[in-house]
Amino acid sequence: MDKIFIRDLTVMTVVGTLSHERLAPRPLILNVVMECPLQAAGVSDDLFKSVNYQEAAELLLELGRKSSFLLIEAFAENSAQLLLERFPLLESVTITVDKPRAIGSATAVAVEITRCRQN
Image (cartoon, rainbow, N blue to C red; front, side):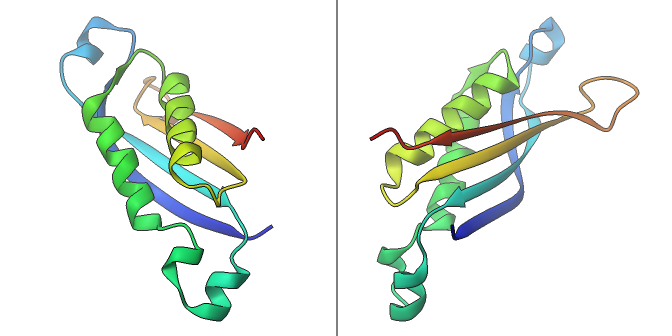
């Protein structure tokens, strides 16, 4: 299957279960893999036969600005559902959400989920 990647998208959002994490937005780093057929877009050079990755990134940035989740798992789930709902061409989406400095002795903690279109 063909894939579109969005790598290292920094999304600012309120996320976390600790009281100090609820005070201000913090960065999450998203890596997104969108599986969809791309041959028609490649042959025709027509954006409407692909997934607009700029629009996908903007949707994720907006979700970050408007949301306030306790868990990065919830942010990942909502992100995947948002993309699948918006882009009918998507067959599946894999999202990795990194939460930098979530624990002291690690660069980040991350979750990764894959969701497929339900027919």
